[in-house]
Length: 109
Image 1 (cartoon, one colour):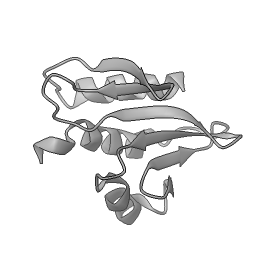
Image 2: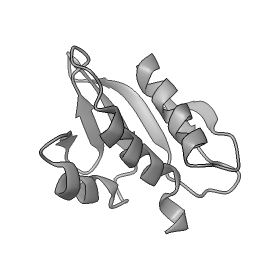
Image 3: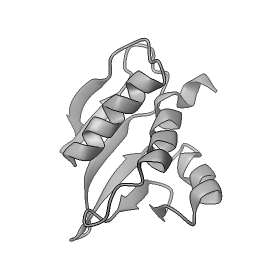
Image 4: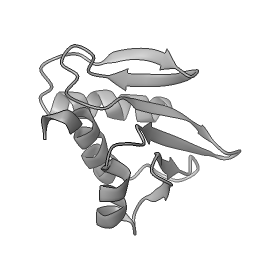
């Protein structure tokens, strides 16, 4: 989960976010958001089931649906809420950076 946290911050810098991310706890999960401008949708990370981790986004966004269509052969999804990852495998960083970048700028589109 620390690797995911670092990837979220790294992606924020790479996309040129003009404001720092706010890190907080929501529903007991680490949450990363752009509160000042509300330009993105909050990203949460947590365990998923017994042996996986996930990146969660708001279920009313189209992010999961969009990425399921684009990267469904590379990433695993849970309903309209999460990208599910196996912590025993290397992170698909390139794909996750695209997803995270779109989440952090979701309301700018």
